[in-house]
Length: 369
Image 1 (cartoon, rainbow, N blue to C red):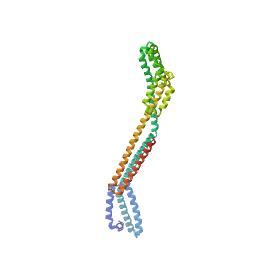
Image 2: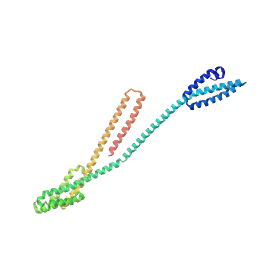
Image 3: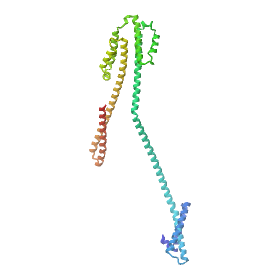
Image 4: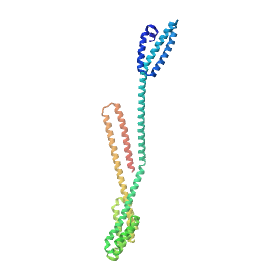
């Protein structure tokens, strides 16, 4: 291109045509700012070529100087035409690339935010799970205390109901004798006042014995045939508490041994004591044994549940170990590529060791309990 421009007047017309074509096309696609940039590039090209031509072809007269100026003008036109054609393409390509880069950057930022939110959600869930696991003993303890309190309250209510029921049954049995002395309304008022739920259970049982003795006293005065010998009443009280102990002997033999039970009978329910004292001791002991029976039943229930859970866990671990071993044997006999098989066998072997370690820890924990 530089040689064509340097040849001078012979190629001016063809170059002028090329310049006109480029300028016309450039005006159609170039913006005003791009046109201004093209003109600036053309001026720079005009000056650069002019300086080059003056240095390379020293003008000897005005005609030579005009020729250099004309060729510099041609350079100006070529640079402007090319700039008006090339700049829109370059700017369009650069704009498209920049837009794509911004879209890609926005998508990457959005994906990063999504992953960050997912990580934060997983971390929050993990912390909540850990906090839930850490608070599990406290929750279990509170639940156990609430259950124990509810059972204790139920046992107390039952003891009160049993004491009131014993008085009601005795009154109904002796109503034909004691009715004139102790009207039913008075009897029910005594039950409500002295044997109500607002009274402590020990007080209810003690007053229930007193009320029963009152009923029996009236009955014995009106019908001596109903009178029991003190020794017979003591034996009946001892027989009642013995029947309760024998019916729950398997649960009580460790926490309340038979020797301790017999010593209690000899000390608190001896034949030389008053029947009222023996019956009171009978009710106290039965109340104490009821608590022990309930506690032992609950302990046995929890132990059975714990044993079932350990058995289920042991069976699951054993099944996983056998499945892992079978998979390893299948891989060794599959005939696949050694590198693939060795990698899978290595992973399964690590998993197998982990399962066997868990089974060993489970056995040790079971032996410890």
